[in-house]
Length: 74
Image (cartoon, rainbow, N blue to C red; front, side):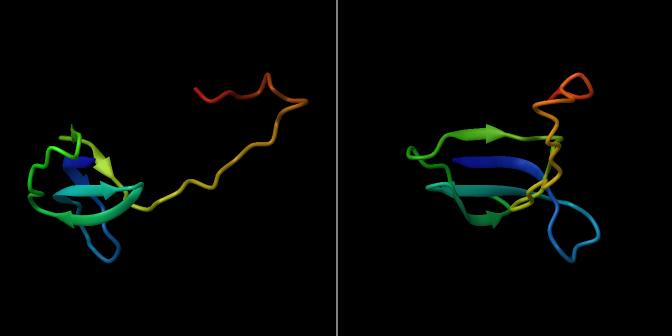
């Protein structure tokens, strides 16, 4: 899969960069300005969207069972 034209936020950088991200077998294998098209990769245009490669949000609520009325995924 190739994620194209994302505003990629990288560690140590002050501003995001317009880059492509190549993913092979569920792992990021390249981050570069223009990835070569490939018939083996689906393309997704992320123009205007921020991308945080490798970032995971560990924020979790364990409200089930009990307080399911307080919050849902949406």
